[in-house]
Image (cartoon, rainbow, N blue to C red; front, side):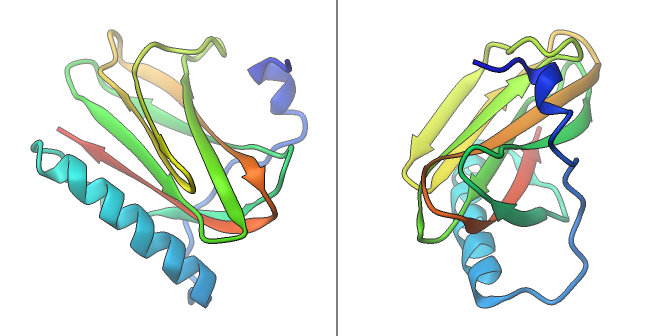
Length: 142
């Protein structure tokens, strides 16, 4: 198993998309907003903006985020077919996995966290099963 530090050698940080969505990107965004809506029922607010791109098998995407102690977060992702299973994992600034809640349901996945300390964290999104596909990732907080 690779460590998070080694993954940075081959992975670009995701950037917010400002371009017109393809049909697959729109489908991914619709699916992820449906998932994030479930967290809204628990008082979470979906952050404006999203990250999207293409996931390929064996090439996870990493997003660097700044989180604040006292806030709770959910990072939700979705991808249309041919993606079959996604994984969202959270890491601290040293690249160690952090304990939190995990949700996986086929081509949608989420990870929740109530950080003990404010600072830099990393969200790792991986295509576990399936073929290259567009994805969309959003986060919710309270």
